[in-house]
Length: 114
Image (cartoon, rainbow, N blue to C red; front, side):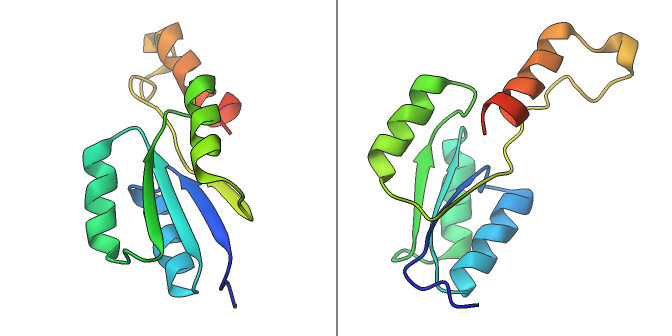
């Protein structure tokens, strides 16, 4: 697939599926921006991918509307957006043990964020 001149934002691109997708898109010639909440993780991903001309990183928490607006103001036009981001802290428990706030955070990051 020819992805030259294609600009892709991958939210949650600092690890896991998002990082794997970023690698694949870069291999296909796309320009990629990986965004996330953790600067250390984004820096490690940037170093691992080692494509300084085609890869950018951006700090943003997609559960915060102002941060999303600021992100889009900085990065401009895109062809594709992918969100693999999730804040699941406290959500992997038996249902009676899950705090409502943990469940609300998951929904904010997986539903409202994208």
